[in-house]
Length: 323
Image (cartoon, rainbow, N blue to C red; front, side, top):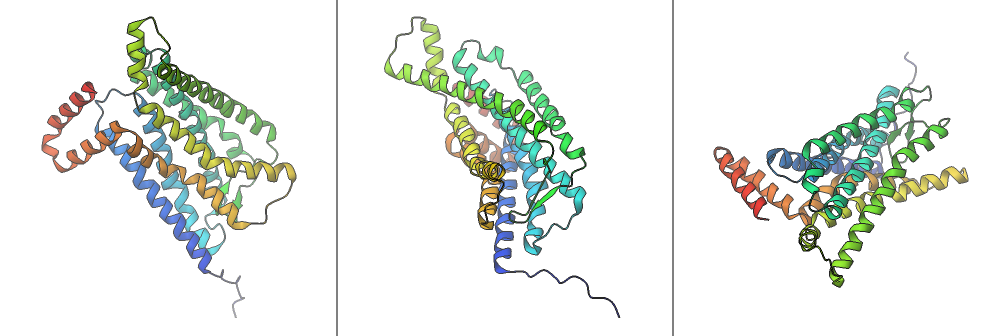
């Protein structure tokens, strides 16, 4: 007679609902970022180097939707991690790495917008596509290496039973964690705050009619400030931090008070509110970026009229130059 195994987990309506929410978010994240990536790759002739940063963000978000979110669907139903410690450790590593890549990419985006306002006459020579591509390669490689020590450590990964996600165990690596936070968050936050403070200050000066004696600079500055990309990029960064700040705040409170909030749904909601940031970028681009809407239109026209892609590309470049 075979011994009785462990009892099968009880599948509840709440568990099924949470699984449906996670699955729906994964599908939405994948569709949104596939559209962004396909749109930018389809229009390689555009001159805006900020598209390189947006493409990097979309790739990071797509990896979240493909490699992280789906692995939480089944565990949310059975209420336990079923894929083993190795997969759990890799998921935790990807979470930290992709999050840091996004933070650093936002920093470079802020620098790009700052230079567009600070040096409007030299912007195109300072921010070349090759230089921006090098910064993105540097960001992906450096963040992948900086986040490696916890992955290679001896501490077992942690499965969050409330949010159904795996995390790296940073328990005895607080010195390293603090160093990583200083290296990533310090420069990023300072750069973003300074860059957009300067941009909005110049907006205010221009609207108040402060005289600028160099007419060529004044014309270039006015043209640069009229670009909606500044607002779009600021909203992207603000949405990212609004999505993750509640979760970060709760985790810090739990750490310093050595207690855990006994509200399981709160942990679930805060974690997935942060993950949902990977979806909002597509909505923000469609809403606030006329250039992106033009590129999306060109993408769908290309799909529908493959034979006329060269003509459509030329029309797109002409429209871009006219703007």
